[in-house]
Image (tube, rainbow, N blue to C red; front, side, top):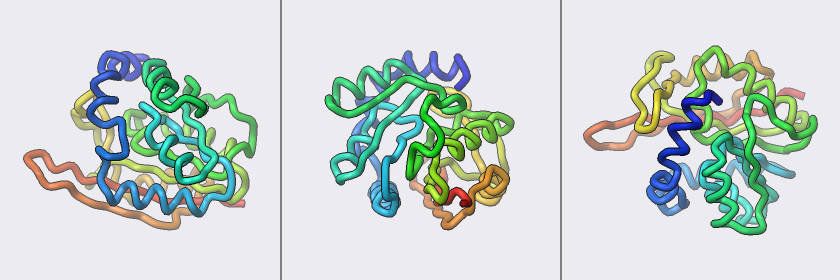
Length: 201
């Protein structure tokens, strides 16, 4: 992840954890989708870009073997304090230290939104490397009619059309199984998307 993204999230890590760092703050549809997806993964799950650690902790509470990794040390410090006994590590999604075939599933829940489109294939290649054949991937992202940057609350992020992101996943060796979209009403509605994929054997 770019140094400026890490810096900006470090500056706002405490605020982010307070406002968004628990399952209670999340949309019920998101909780249902992630929980259902994890139930179909038969082995260890990587929460890639875990932030304050709430998703990994939720998956462990549901009986899964899950670990978290994030490029922002302040997030990892918070996760370790909030969820002692769980594994959280500092790391770059584009250069994972895990061995090949280490995970049955990778959860990338809005953790790819700050990667420029040209940088995404390298991250997906790492996901493919650490996933076992047939392993699952769930990606949460902001949707739009085109691939374009926008002013995220922390720093510049990218919208993807579901078709465009599915094409990148396909090139990276993943089979797209499901696509989900939803919108949240309000002054600044921001359409959300999720793609369930599987690494080709």
